[in-house]
Amino acid sequence: MREPRYVVIADDLMRKIAAGRWAVGELLPTEPELAAEYGVSRETLRRSLRRLEVAGLISRHPGTGTRVERSTPVAAFTAQLGSVGDLTQYGEAAVRSVLSVEPVTVDAALSAVTGLAEGSRQVCITSTRRDPGSPDEVVSWARVYLGPGDAKAIAGDLEESRRLIADSIEARTGRAVKRVVQQVRAVGVSAEAATHLGVEPGSPGLEFVRRYYDASGALFEVTVSIHAGDRFVYETVLQRN
Image 1 (spheres, rainbow, N blue to C red):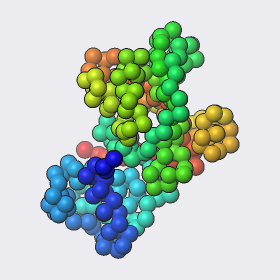
Image 2: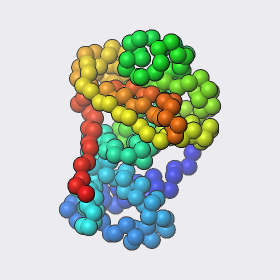
Image 3: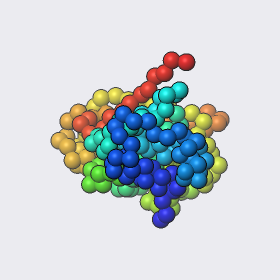
Image 4: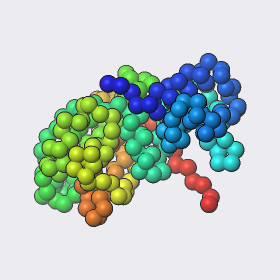
């Protein structure tokens, strides 16, 4: 499958940085200059730069420019999420492998974690995500809960696309994400997740619970993902207005 244009540009920029085209501490050309060089819109160029930022290669500073921070990507998989757009970027950066798809009935314990109605019927998609820079290393193990109708609509997309499942639902049904509520907590990695993450059961991990709501306020997707604590960095950027 052909890579999106912004991925091709990001890979080219990474190669140039690794080759010393721009030294650590040096500023990259401006966004308009790079967009013109590659013949793309500034939005496409920004998506490319975001991939470099997630890899730890650059940092962006309003009013100053984009500075090279490293010549090679950081070892840990770093996610910087501040918007639904950033969440989409994370989905495109990490490669999904589906382990199972099965119907479930939400019990009291699952309802407490997900916020889904107890007794409701859902489809549970269990999967892993891998960092494309280290394809042998699993970044996360996750379970996604969808209504049967949405699950059926996107069944053919699960292995064929890197898109977030929520983006596939929008493409197939028109139901778009209006709001995402995220909770993060420290956990001991479960035995099942540990098998795929390659860590000891009970070792430190981060659990992310993301609840996706549409324009009507309806909860239509819940993702519960586990990350090994020693190989995942979650970064939040707070900026004074």
